Amino acid sequence: MRRMFFRARKWALLTAAGGVFVLSGCDTTVRDTVLSGVESASTVLTTTFLQAFFQSLMSQGEGAATVVQATVDSGQIFT
Image (tube, rainbow, N blue to C red; front, side):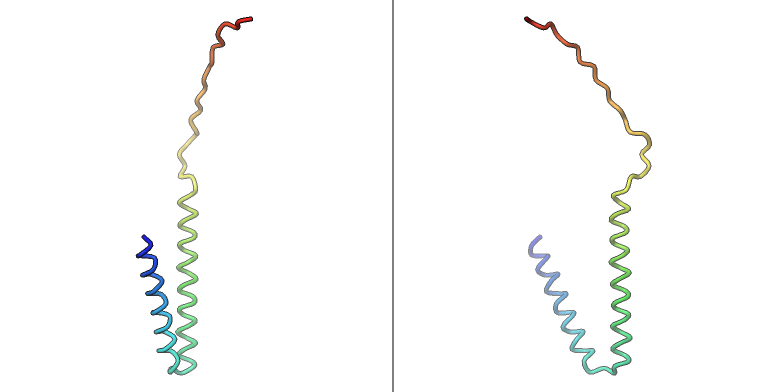
C-alpha cells in the first residue's frame, strides 16, 4: 500500500512539473484558459467524490429499527 502511495505522489509531481514546463512557453491566453479548465475540473471532481462519500454514509431507508427487549428474572436474594 505504501509503495502505491509513493508511486501516486511521484506521478502527480511529475505531471505537475511537466505541465508547468509545457505551459511556460505558451501564450498567456492559452495558459490561462488551460489553467482555469484544470481548476474547474478538479473542483467538480473533488465535489463529486465528497458528495458520493457522504451519500454512502446516509441511511438507505432500511425501515424501522429492530428493537430487542430482554427480561431478566431476578434470582433469590440471599440475606
